[in-house]
Length: 99
Image: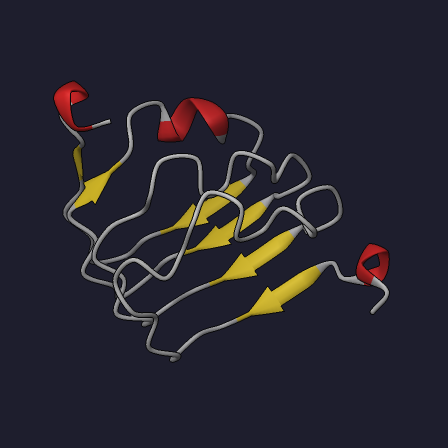
């Protein structure tokens, strides 16, 4: 598969099981992906480092999930994102003891 041509991935309305996302889940697309849509995917948490390799990502859509805990420094990693949509989320930072 030719990953260098993938710029946008839409996963909206797909049920993603707890624990199925890992820190290396996007490692092959990290250098080329610009947009990631994961709206209404039943996400409850984001693992530490899950998007760390995604330096080209500009748009992140996480709307209508049940995310309550996000990893520390999540927003520092994404300081270059132009747009992140998370309508309806009530996030809190993961306690340092858990990472």
